[in-house]
Each structure stands twice: as C-alpha cells, then as structure tokens.
Image (cartoon, rainbow over all chains, first blue to last red; front, side, top):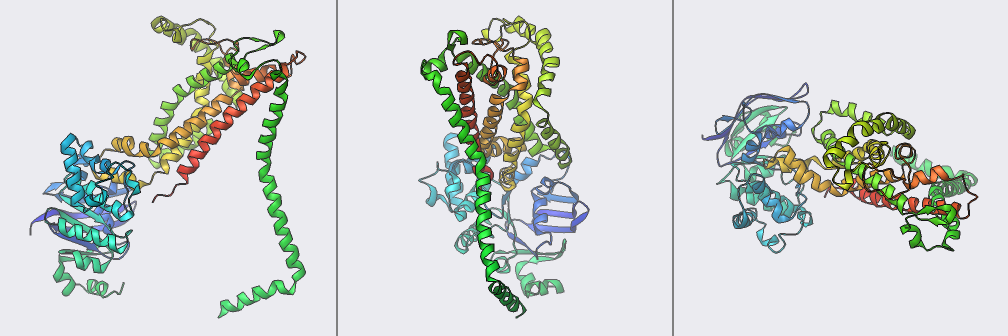
Length: 250
Length: 328
C-alpha cells in the first residue's frame, strides 16, 4: 500500500487527559479514508494532528510522529503554514471569510503569492467548478460570501481549500451542519476528487462511511481498534468492538 | 402519571383562593409598571436636562445668532462677546491628540491580549487594565501636573521645537508645558482602558472557526488577524474608538489641571487651550452677575452634552449589532 500519511506511536493529551493512545496508522494515497467511532473517541483529535491544528488549543501536547510523504511534520524547522497548505480542511460548518465570493477563493492564492491577474481569475473559476459552485455564483462573484446558503458556503469553503493546491483534504464531519441535498452535493464532490487528493474524513454517520470509504479506521476511547480496506472492515470485522459498533450497539 | 397529578394540583391551587389570585395579578401589573417607570427615569432625566439647558440658553439667542456663537472667536463676557470657537477648537485639539496617541497602542494591546497572550497572562493583564479606568480623574490630573507637564516643558517641547519647529504644528509658543500636549497625554492614558476593553470584546466575539478557516489555507497568525479578524471587527473597533473619544470630549478635571485654560485658537500642540468642560467647571457659579454669562455657559453645556450623546448613541448602536450578532 502506498501510504500518504503515516502516524507512528502518536499520543495526544489535553492537559493530563490522553486523547490519542499509541496510534499507528497508514493512510493510503488517493483514496477516501473514513475515521469513524462514537463521540469523544479521538476522531477529530487525530484529524487535527495531521494539519497541526491541535496546537491551536491551549494545553495540548503531542508525542510520536506524523509523516506526510515521509516527512515528519512535527520535526524541527518545519514551516507550519506549509503543512497546512498541504492539508486542506473542510470544517464541521462553513466559515466564509468576511469578503466576496471571489476573494474567498483567491485568499490562499494571494497569501502564498501563487497567482496574479488573469491567472488568478482562471484559478478561482477552476476551483469553483471543482467544488461544483461555479454555475450558481458566476454572476455574483463580487458579492459577499455570507449571502450564500449554508450548503453553498460549504462548497465555497471546499473551493477555498482546493485553491492552494493541497495534497490532502481533511473533512471534519463536513456535512453535519447541512441539509440532506447539500450533504449529497459535498459527498459527490469528495468522490469526484479522490483521484487527485488523499481524503481523510471524520464522520459519525455510518451510512455515509459506507457510501464513501475506501479505507476505514475505527476508533474507540482514543485507540485505533481496527483499520483496513472498507469492504473487509464492514463485512468481516476482526474485532468484537468494531462488530458491536457496526451493529449499532453504541 | 405522577406529573399529571401535580399539574392538576397546581391548577386547582389558585382556584381555591381566588381572592389571593386576583391580588397577585394586580400586584404583578403594578410591579411591572413600577419597574418600567424606574428604568425610564434615566431617559427622562436626559430629556429634561436637554430641555432645561435649551430653555436657559434662550436669552443669548435674543442678541446673537447660533452661528455667531459657534463661530465667534472672542470670549469677552463683559462686552457681551461669547464666541465658542476657541473652546470648541480646544476640545477638538485635545481629543484628537489623545486619540492619536492612544488608539494605535490600544489596538495592539487588545490584539495581543485577545489573539496572542496565554490564558494566564490574560487573567492578570485584563483586571490591571480595567483598574486604570477606576483611578479618579483628579489623580490623573495630579500625575499630569507633576510628571507630564515638567517633562514636556524641559524635554519634549524643546526637542520637538529644535527638530520640527519649522512646522507650526510643533512650534513652541508657550514655554510652560501646560497645554494641548499635556492634556492629550493624560487623556490618552485615561481613555485607554475603555478602548482596549471594547476592542478586546469585539475581537473575542469573532468565532474561532473563522480564524481557523484562514489558518487552514496556510495563513500565518498575523495574516489571519490582518485580513480576516480585523476586517470582521472594523465596525466594532471604530465604535470603541468613538466611545473613547466621547469620554475624552467630556473629561473635565484632569484636562483642566494641565491644559493651560487660555481661550485662544491653538495652532501648535504645545499651545494652551481651553476645552468646553474646563470653561464650564471653572466659571459656573462665579461672575454670574454678568448679563447672559449664565446663558452662554448653559449653551456650552448643551453643545457638549449633545456631541457626547451622539457619539455614545452611535457607538452603542454599532456595538450592539456586532457583539449580539449570531454567526450564520
């Protein structure tokens, strides 16, 4: 298996409370990896270690390694902004920046000085198309992004994340604030995008996991109970706890 | 089942004592009206104040127009010359100098406290800053006279005069140290806790998800603050500054002690000035035998009150929109 992200003996703590215990994982390239498990099992914490968002919370601590393309992202001299640029994030609910639709997508490109003028226009259009939003917003690119519906906002956030050309796409329950139709939109986008990006998705919706996953990680109380190709885990789980969860016992 | 029973009991309870129930109802209406009138009291008070000041200013309008009062440059009560312009100019100069000195420092302090400081630093710094607001203004005045005025007289004014004296704005025409600059420095420190506290609140009202949205595409923290947080907060920050300015406009004691109190049109930050509050505080109660003097001072109070009211209402309106705004 071609691992894009790898964790080695990864432990995370909120103060003295352990949130991740000895997580050893390999996340395959250009597939959708779904991290599932009950609330508070450490799914989101694990996701946040991959784009170094965990350190934004006061009192968090980490030991072990997280490798992207074999490079330790917690190593010395690593530029945290480069890591975050490499690992795009789709949050639980959309947060459009206080600027126009166009500027939201152009934001990352401007920050990193990647594109200018005509090239910038083209990039914005390309990524809005990629996120399936172009047709709906092409006539009002200059109006404030907060005027969009919440489902459109989430696709805008997807476009904003894709614009800086990440390798990874991290989704932290990205459909949980959306109506069913908008959620379906996002799911379809993720399926379309997996050929170009490695997608890591946290979800507590079992049916969504089954619809999207190529590879599954099941977590419980901060530990990885089981991980493997989706079909294998869903159809013949090796662990008793995985089976119990899939049957809806907790 | 159990719940149903208790509900029934509750329902039947007032019926048995219908007399009591009636009096409870009327009591309720009475307290409602009473509390309403108590809370309306301040509003009525302000309205009455404006009305009273307006009525008592009237005599002066019989001999002078509003414009000649507002734009008149000479203050000579015995000759019935009541030009407010030197006082209005004094107020504006002192307030502007205070805001120029205070606003940048306050913005950076608030940004540091809200965005960079550790929680422990925050818990120590915030109450200390709030404490600045609790110091009586006369104490600031004394500090101004003992520390700021001599420093301006001996060091700052000569220095500026030497290097920038060719600009009228920094020319020293008044060697005493008492003047706009001293008033501005004292006021800058006095309004700082208000501007910092409001800016801090406005920054705190920005949802973390918005900061993370910017960080997630690889923006640095400073870029996030500059392009996202501050853009989101701009109206609130402006409201905070306006509120700070309205405090500076009305501040009397501390300014009066260091500003020199000469009714003239200042041309330099080292000139003495005579702001409106100082005029009123220094003269009301004295020399009221002079005809129209009383009416002129009432006019000065009215101008001051209206300006401060407008500033306060504006900033409160903006702030209530921002801090109360839910993020959807």
